[in-house]
Image 1 (cartoon, helix red, strand yellow):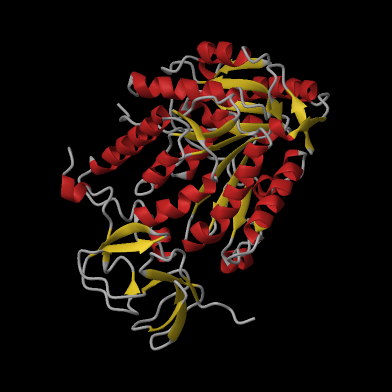
Image 2 (cartoon, helix red, strand yellow):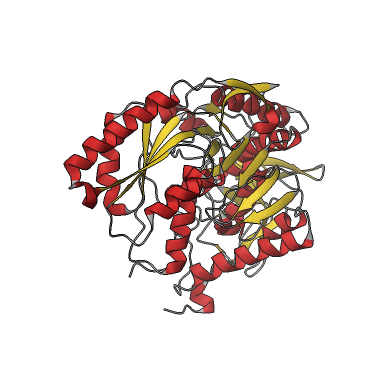
Length: 101
Length: 386
């Protein structure tokens, strides 16, 4: 059995999770809604981390588990490593809402 | 289907038969620890609270200590106080004693300081351990199981592998008529809409919304982005980008059954079914809170590898991260494999975990118990130390 390199949890997701340490330039085959898609990684993606399955414009939702996990803080290209450098959280943001202290 | 437990006078069933040496205030910790170290069969519960706090927190500390004392894994309790603290030892003693178990008290100032307190505490604890040792394990059906769950040192394997397995075990326990409790309200942020859909009534859904808003406001009060605190530095290293992502993976550990009610931190839960306890995610405070609900065992799902247990509630560590399974084999009780899509592998993982829970309930020791990891706990408070 060939070990899967990545997993897409929900068909609505625009990111996949790496099941191995993946290298820049590697081509990952993913099947989403019965459509096979080849994604070439633009950067290294460590085990358990995420990469983009499609273009995600800045300000658009990043989707995993079929749910919004945050907002793209810059334009994300297909195959980009997706993490805190290009995704911001929408919750617990005292820096935006302002604190009381 | 059954397990072997200890019958308690209030009808609860314990899976351990310890004597709890419980500090009523931080100032008693040194004495409580010495007694527990000396007396085989006793365990210390230590914390940082009990004095110079607002009445809201003092009440929360009192309630939590009472309900910890009532936990069925304790056959008896020795309360240790300094003597001048705001939390009242006699009130705690009376309320624990309502459960019918023996409760004794010890005051460090009153008895003449540390050395006489340790000597008298050891004498009392020795008698209590011998008295408890005659209680025999009996057979109980699975509806007497009361189990908590926590995820800690999470990475993306937690949401993909070990939390779903914990959730599958929770469903089985609920279906057998038992009690299941989960919490970590901070890790509902971004996933609360899913939990609210599972609420048994609109009132319960409202309560879920209320505790999430309250917890988020506490974090926002500091005027910063909470990322780095939640998700933690370790979570981020493990691939979790936002609290929303962490939450969506975290809530899976509560299974899929209806949420019957929401309890405040430190409350005792005597009903059957699935419940939420409002609580923060940090281990020392969470484990104490869930122990106070009366659970006998805590499933602890970890990605990167959290080692701690709890003094008198066995903590069953599970992990789906292959590297953690190798490097921290001395801390992980059960390895969980990645469920394959379209197979019954998740149901099997849940069934295996259910069997392991019953083995531990019947006396099998967890790795954290054998190591003695988890001596230091705390109680969650919301106000300042004043």
